[in-house]
Length: 380
Image (tube, rainbow, N blue to C red; front, side, top):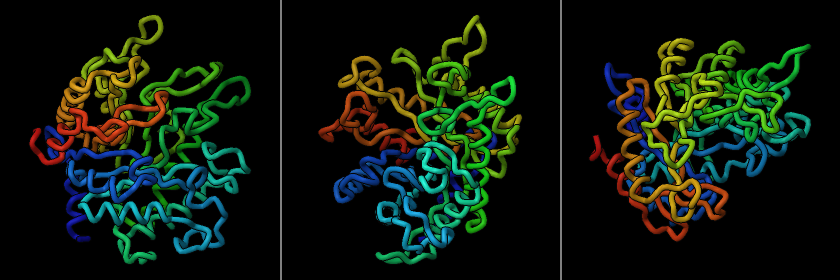
């Protein structure tokens, strides 16, 4: 099993001359996969031939592994740690033949003076030690309460750090000017996860960036955020390094946008600040300019449906067509290896997301069949 797992990861990450022949499609839905009923959810994931599952590995905050400060933070067996949901997920994933990609996110209150889970840790070494513990637990050699745990070879650092929901503050004032504080903080986060995981798993593949599709670049707004390209450039200047892939979430902006529709221009006719699938090549070029031959991962994407979302949703047929179009578009980009769909099942609250392959009653949408066709290689 371990040899097969390494081979599968090698296929996912293998570069090609003119297209990503081995791009894999996956699912990201923590509510269902991490915290739902595994006896119900994992057979469904198997039915649709899921080969990749993304999950947030929460260091701190809600459902955090380390909300109590560990005595030996690099030891995954430290009694302060609670890995229950993640052990169950990686074991269930192995049983259905799926890889897991873990995204380390969230700061425990003890690591940043109680400023909130979405504020960077005061000391980068604390995050690095947690990454070491996580990489050891999911190295393929660690034995948990239910037996030996499978290896996790794909990792992400945080989630949407250019969005204040996930990392704040976005800006801070230095003298008479504003600086993009989130990029500086995130460079430390990225480097800590890379160093920690790689110290245990030299051949693991780690994605940084994990950026949201848009931002206002306005420190004086009521909700300051950073656009993907501005964030990427600031991240490079802040010294982020060592990662294998740059991850991004190229969501559409209005329900009239298809995966091929460019985002609207910026103010006064300037270039768009958003990076969606419609102008994804902008990100591809900039990542290559700044970081050379790193890979590109789309670690979150989806279209909401109407019903139930009448404002932002598209029809079931359009959602299915757009999934297919998005996959084929990304497959033509030789830098892209990973395409993760959000969600498996619609969220319950209408203000949440309704981009699932199933509605709330677990009735299939058309996109469910397209997902299975992609996973089994019937769409090429």
